[in-house]
Image (cartoon, rainbow, N blue to C red; front, side, top):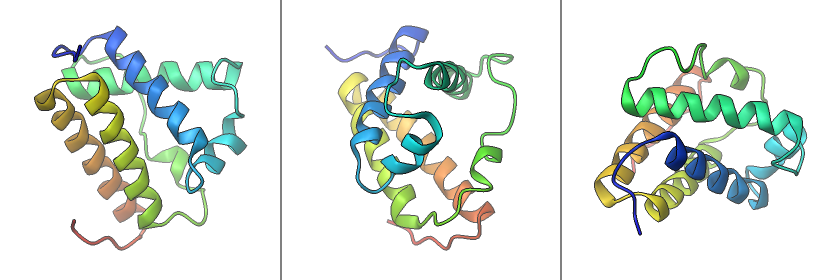
Length: 131
């Protein structure tokens, strides 16, 4: 059954399902494997996943104070990022959101993810085309 409410439990499910897919992805998975390893239950992933939970809850609900920082900063020093990689990240995120949320809510997540990807590409000076 698809969820129509954004709460901690549903966001945690989204984030974990998404990164399970990401780790298996040939194009973008290696960045996460290098940074955090292949076990979502290890200490590095635990901290990262909690931060991501807080980030998405804050972004989608407007609840302040859950996430502090700039999500762009960790991406500043990753070399070799391309539009194709960002497109894959967004596509996997959209696919996962659509597996968990009703279409309207999933579309809201997709819109935020797409906006973040465009912002990151702009800030990283990666040209992007509209889809």
